[in-house]
Image: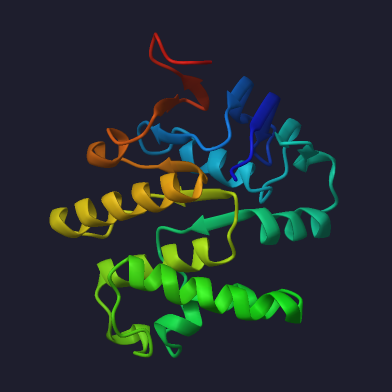
Length: 226
């Protein structure tokens, strides 16, 4: 179900023209679980947001046969809505809505025929992640529960790609470990391509492959596929 990723000559520059990310070549197979590690400010989140088509960049970012950097902004938005689930570090949930409403939010932007399916999958993802009261407002949820709602939202649209930015950053160790186990299991079960930026070594250790970003460049341990 996941998508292959091919990157060639990717560059993201600052408004003053300084290179803040440079990736000459990167290939990730569909269904892979990839961790992105490295120090703060190295360019990890920049890479993640570039992969989602949320940053202006030069080069090629190709998901299967679609090069994001050849698309107009509205086309990138449409591609992201259909193919990429995002887990943000600060959750980005609507406090006044229930867990179920937040998790099925993407249904509002899909054709009517697809909405019931998204709502059903949202309910299933919430249940699989251990949230037993989906009608409660997320304002009453703990940090770990909120992050599970955010993951359910990202997965409810059946997106073949899941991009996660520090998904365990706000959680205590026990909650983080439970979330990692659930996230990895759901990704593997669905064949999703998962790319996660994290400082959490527990999460990084569960990935198939680890990329380290340093000073805007990718360094990969020996023995791993390029």
